[in-house]
Image (cartoon, rainbow, N blue to C red):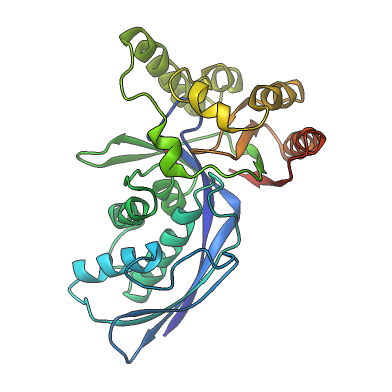
Length: 300
Ligand code: HSE
């Protein structure tokens, strides 16, 4: 028995919702081909598209580690499983690269096991993969990758995950400036204490963004996409971040920010044409300051 699964890139945080908001896009994403074998245990037979960066050792690879966790849970720890991973998006880009691979692997094994668990029930297993990848099991990439669309992680303990509605025609312009920003470092640089007055501003924006999504009110969505806690610190890792924002906003973005822990940036737009125009302008600017970039015009 064999199965091929695609899992999507995700934009975590969505500016104001650090660790609690994220959305999935239709592309890019990663692919896993999984085969049940006569042998014992998990093997990774092939990884492509990673420039040799990812470990083939099943104990160290996030995909196999979370699949193993799933197999232990369902009482089949020694099941023979062969995994091929095809990375189709850049690693360390802030687009939920590790999450897409992990989610593809978990979705594959769960399908091969006749859907013993729901997609939502797979989230804690995928969080184990994130923990291995960056030291902390955040869910704002894996939950949207598994469930699609916009997702709110209302609580981590206990885990409480809510799918949010959003305007159907919404698109994302995504640009990945090719500079290195490891999630682990980008998490460590954030202040761990905040002032109450800043918290008030932030939760006002999170509530505003969620309300805007429900009400399909682009103006409310846009003015809520403000982050005073994390972005001011992380933006220094991204070349010309505030210039990129002003270019995106001038060209019709609803809102703009860092995707996950960066260095990718994204703009939400009302249609594909605006997203495409914004990606071109952002790429052009990055080129003018000698930074190569990749871009995607994606459906939310
Ligand atoms: N919420 C996580 C962070 C997402 O910002 O560190 C990482 O992609």
